Amino acid sequence: MGISIDKEKCTGCGNCTSTCLFGLIEVVDEKACIKEAGCTLCGACRDACVFEAIRIETEIAKTLLGDEYKGVWVFAEQRNSEIKSVSYELLSKGRELANTLKTELCAVCFGYNIKNIEQLTAFGANKVYVIDDPAFANQSEDQYVLELVRLIKQYKPEIVLAGATPFGRSFFPRVAAILKTGLTADCTGLDIDTEKHLLRQTRPTFGGNVMATIICPAKRPQMSTVRPRVFKKNPPDATRKSQFIKVDFNKEAITSKTRLLNFVADLTEKVKLEDADIIIAGGRGLGKPENFNLIRDLASVLEAAVGSSRPPVDEGWIPYYHQVGQTGKTVCPKLYIAVGISGAVQHLAGMQTADCIIAINDDPNAPIFQVATYGIVGDLFKVVPLLTEKLKGG
Image (cartoon, rainbow, N blue to C red; front, side, top):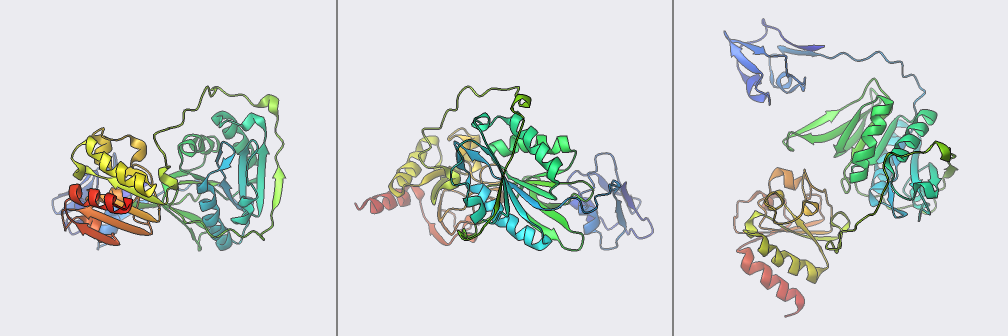
């Protein structure tokens, strides 16, 4: 397992040196040399070599998977008995993956007095494994981990997906670690390699500058977390039928190292960013934190959520939970108004799937205009108040 250079093929052109993100390649005596210590075997240098002089050998564990692992599972997360929207998004994508693999799609849902659980069927599940019990009323991470691990070991699904929500990001890696399998976090794309029957898991890396496609050939299940609003929900089919399986568990065996004392809701967030149909987002162009009042006034008129690019969050102008982008939230509203946002690739990754994008910026060359449906080139301190007054009917 490692990387090597065929000195006979290498011409010392140097194409590979600029592609190495860690600066591990240099040309010595007209031949490329690689410092293997620190190399992640990402393959960027190999792909850049037109002379095919770079070889990467990876060692795949000899695990006999056979046909015992079958099916696509979606962990249907709920909070306060309400199933989260990302669960339906994953079921819609899971239905596509299951059809390609010619297998069944199952949902797994833990909670208490879960509402509208039949919707899991309408969005594509063939089977729904349910624990509906007071012991699961709160999202006790230890309990969720143990029960999901037990079910996976019992039924052996081939693929297991969960939302990259705060809770999903916390408990799902623990499940993967116990099962000794791989987990790709924050995926933005999923598809099936039809030749090898592997899940191709695509996610941004290196600050969103590189898209990595990851596979897990030797371990099962293949596990991924997916950001909310990355995949669109299919229209629900109320005529679809499925099997509901009530899961029995040993209550005496359920213990937790933590106890939820209280859950404090953010009362300042009138409209949840990830669920909003309209988002008004501000950027560095606002100049100072007080100017976010322009954004809030417009959002109030439109009953919209308030968003932000990363710079205002880094400056402390607005809390992190308003951040849209690669290191924030992925959103897909019907209308996204970007005010004073230049449009860095990291921000575009979180909002460019919006149905309609309106950009307001005084720089006509700002990258945000490349993805905008409509663009307004002008002083935001004049444009936004005029727009607010017009919408008020003034």
